Amino acid sequence: MNKRIFALVAVLTLVGLLVPVAVFSAESTVTCTVSAVLVSVSVDDGSVAYGTLALGATKNTAKYDGSNNPNGMATPQTQTITNTGTVQEDFRVKTSNAIGTTAWTLGETAGSDIFTHAWNWGSTQYDGSGSITFTQWTTADTYLVSGVDVPAEGGRYLELQIGMPNPVTDYGSHTITVTVEALEG
Image (tube, rainbow, N blue to C red; front, top):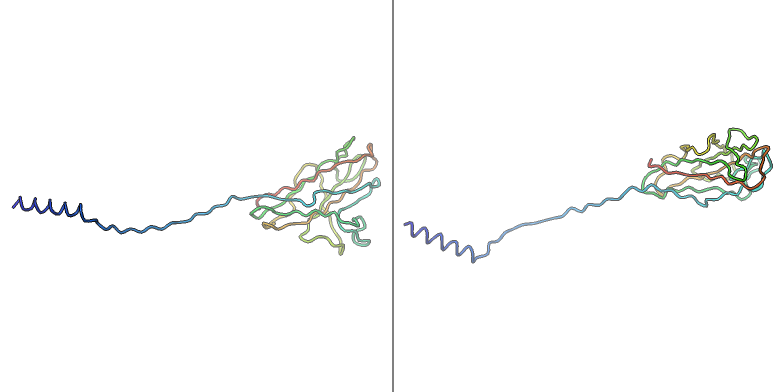
């Protein structure tokens, strides 16, 4: 009897080796995507020419209007600030002192070699109707939060205003740098 069982097992083993065994399986995939956060800002056109101004005078980049903005410009020099990142951003701005042969220092009020500098954010560009209000910087090279919750591809309009010193030691050209920083908002 053992021989028969052994023979049967041997035959079944040989048959199992010769006959393919069907194995059923299935697979599927999961596609994963990821993007890195990009915080980025652009300034267009990035240049303001206040021109030659009288001592103690005030000039801003917004559109001139005889009643509403007599210190504005006939051809506005509004700066367009755009969120070129992939997430909502908050914009911050800072100004420098005015660099020339003799530096002019930023101050709360204009004085001897002391100038004032101010800014205004708008979600629309100032068109000369209604008044325009500026927020004055009081300390050079210090960021102030200004444009908040700007969506990706969204933007703000930045107007700037200078108050000239009176008197000045140096009548030559001076350069002021305004820096816009974007933070994830």
